[in-house]
Amino acid sequence: MASVELKGLSKRYGEAVAVDDVSLRIEHGQLVCLLGPSGCGKTTTLRLIAGFIEPSAGEIVVGDRVLSSPSRTVPPEGRNMSMIFQSYALWPHMTVAENVAYGLKIRKLDRATIDARLKAILATARLEPLAARYPGELSGGQQQRVSLARALVVEPETLLLDEPLSNLDANLREEMRFEIRRLHDQYRYTTVYVTHDQAEAMTTADLIAVMNHGRVEQVGPPEEIYARPRSEFVARFIGGANILRGPALDDRRVAVAGIPLRTSGRRLEAGRPVTLSMRQHEIGLAVEPPATADNHLRAVVARQVFLGSVRDYTVVLEDSTELRVTAPPDRSFAAGQSVWLHLPAEQCRALAEE
Ligand code: ADP
Ligand code: MG
Image 1 (tube, rainbow, N blue to C red):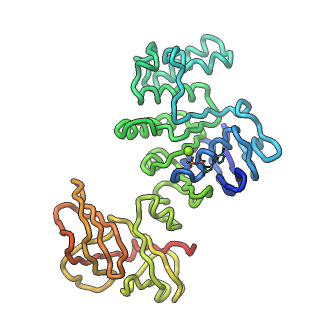
Image 2 (cartoon, rainbow, N blue to C red):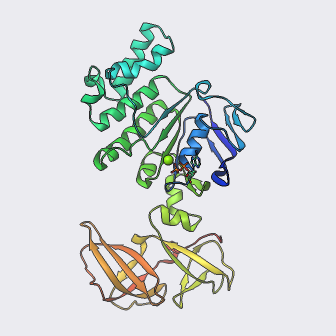
Image 3 (cartoon, helix red, strand yellow):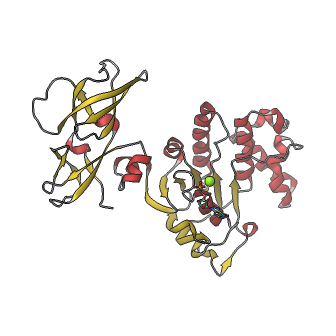
């Protein structure tokens, strides 16, 4: 097994740039999620790694072998990678056991080895009771486990998954996220997992690479991406952060809707425009005027939705900026009501200048 390194990787289709100068190192045994909206270049990146397409620029290095470059690309069958697509593509006329063992048979392994490996993977994927069934007799989640087992049993150097859970319903999708992470913990294949679903990435990944317009905007462990987004795009895409804008008053304070807010994060330069990000649940909501004016803003409630464990508010500042606030359900503020927002300085993060 080996690390996978993308170096300045680009893919152009005529004038259009699908993947734009992507550099990313995936250590041996790591699970990295490529996360981003539809059309941001995730599938193209995965197909480049698999060797289905050639890069326009840059290279892909696995271990110490250059597998892709504009001058030479090793075909998929020379790569020892398994790729799982959105559709599971199981063979309908073969049983679960036959589907899973197929890759071992075409590799011409001996009977005893095939049986031993098949037994182990069926147990891990919890497919033993289903071994004699045909795909048509399985639920979506069971078919997905078969497709995972089939990819894992050949002991690939690298496992590539393209939105593998998108055909499942919501409950099953949640269960399968844990399943994929569990299988990864057991086998530790170097894995690239493509998804547009933030929760899926948070559950499964060691590292998340957030993609936008063919580029990687930020790479880091899930907690770091969430806690310290570096751009407005990442702040909004991961956890739907609020964005506030205003000029810097000094190295720590920004005027938002005319009110000075103390901030955390980078040092500011007086007079420069600043963008702040702030999570929905980090904003305090009250009707009583605050004891100190510090980091408090006036707002009016525009909407409220009761979600059971929380209330989800949309509030409007005096400069018409809309913010989302999630607050405990026990107190209710009606639409039209005037409120005070508390935006703690530690959570008012100044994003990098674009
Ligand atoms: P994602 O998987 O993130 O949704 P893709 O990698 O499939 O995005 O596509 C990225 C961009 O590249 C899109 O704008 C898409 O239309 C374009 N693209 C992908 N494949 C081709 C192709 N074969 N020819 C032309 N454009 C393509
Ligand atoms: Mg895609």
